[in-house]
Length: 289
Image (cartoon, rainbow, N blue to C red):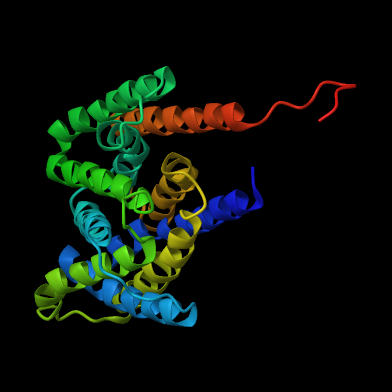
């Protein structure tokens, strides 16, 4: 693997660790989900604009950037809403279906023929998704689970921002988060509870979970494939619910736990098998290169 690819994967990994604080912070903030997304997006856009200025990146607007921006806005807005309507574990594990949607979108829109491993992974992951929705029928989390799954669809396009013709991950992120800030701003103006814990959590979301995280993310995905990037992000669905369970005591139900295990194990297995396939074989003893 080239040095730039290793660096790209490391950056995506760091971003995913920062993303993982989202579930806990959203649960702590006593605001409407659109208010939360607006506040954190305002902070993040400011950070990303400074980053663009420092790195001498020129802002541009193309259909590809707009498409990526819509995906970014949908991902962040739906994620915040889902966290308020279902458990943090359900939200992040359903969003983690993104790699499967990446495979499907590459097949449908970029004519990249899926391999047997791709198709098997898709089938197994959707089996895991079925467990979540069977569980939702008895817990009242159906709407939240649907929004989380739709966030995964949007997240798949976020991973593909660099592949969309005319796309630019950084500026698509800035524009998309700007959209989220505008959509939620009227709700933010109506908030009255600005107590220290909630406000601190909102600032942490804006600075670390969106701003700094997306500096690493948009830089990293320039050097790795959409599927690889989406699979390396597998640390997020582990850390996210663990933080919420440890701090707030929110636990995942047995059926959702089964679904989450199916989704996580199948996608990470796919990642391992892909890594083995992409690793060049060592030359035989005595051979010349």
